[in-house]
Image (cartoon, rainbow, N blue to C red; front, side, top):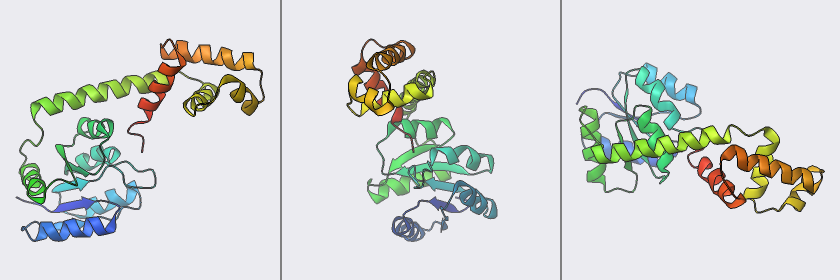
Length: 212
């Protein structure tokens, strides 16, 4: 294996423990500061390229999936190492160029095997799992496109529906008539191509999966 292992994780204890464990296996593991995307990429530029182990939830609204493309552009291979079970976020990272992913709770030998394979340029994901993640990503993209059709006020009304509020309560919240809210709800259902408020709420919730 050539090049360092860059650990991109906002939890200092986790990152330090992982770095020490990987060093004990002969890896040149380096912790990366995770204050912002710019800070991560600046650190990556200063190092010889190798393999970046990137968490998905990096705090402060930063999603690791968004760093995959820029890191790849700098010449890094990227393996997602995360505790999240968010398949949409994992799928987004793979679509952006990550070679695969491994769960933080996996036994350490499993993590080491994944790191060795990724660092050597070997396949980490099976063809079946890659295909499944691509299907997840396509579905998430379709939901994002549908939600993007809504106006700002319609998104606010939909948020109220997700919170379990009825038309009368929403009308009070926005100081409009119940008839106005019902018209907005009909518009929401039409734009989202669903037949009921329950379907609209389910779609809205699925669209939030992977938002970090």
